[in-house]
Length: 355
Image 1 (cartoon, one colour):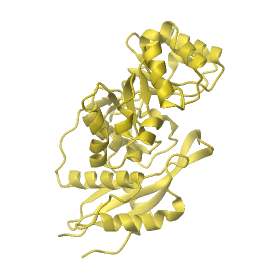
Image 2: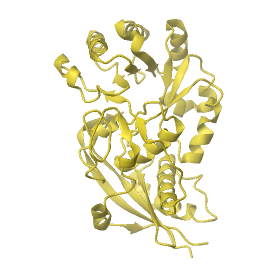
Image 3: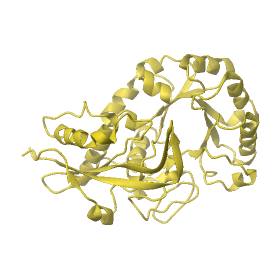
Image 4: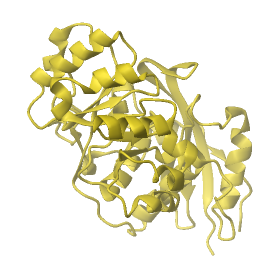
């Protein structure tokens, strides 16, 4: 059996604005690019970028974990004991290697992407020209401003968004019942797709959904209690799935299996990956739920990328020549680092060579 070699190189990508995750404030996105090479010289790339404050992996353990990954990908190895974010990265590299062998199947031409609004929008005049007005769905972070201010923002969006654009409100477990009731009760209610994680207690969120007649979405709850328990909660319209908290494609199939007989929408959600990780997420989402706007709007934080020169417009559609809004055009996504980056990177060989 030909050996597969694993190399890794560090990266740091600046962010356009600071990102707060829990108690951690980030100004750049750090991680490792994995490179798998087979005996025929073909390569596949993966992105391993555990997010501080979300993933438990410690950068101090990176060398040990990468050595374990190098052993796990060999014919008698298993990735089952690797952290989920590293399993995601290894699976991404293996998918790239399959592409190099012409073994991958085709994916849909494009993928709708939900816009993400978490800035303050202090000037209402900014709303008509906001970068995401072309998207089919807009996710608005709530519970971060005065309630009157948030209602005013939602009212302005309702007035100025085109017909058919839905709103996803994300409470990040910061709301109380009065706030939640107020945020779903307004002229924008007809646009409301769901209210995501309004309260820390999932049973309270479920009861609220049934009482108010609105759908809720599970994110943190889903990843904390697991899919078998989450599927029992009533009033749930969507699961917001972060693949880097689950693992590779086989892990994701097993994770989503309990929802297969329920009317639950699966929304793929990013954890602030670079374009390489976003491309792999888009590929998975395009196969899993091709008509559901994916939660990949985090690309607006990227101040630079390992893959330069990909055209993107104010609405979020990517394609070689540039632009319409609200989707990723799959053929234009960067499936590997740029040649210049690969040549300049300081690659480190992981683990022992297996003959």
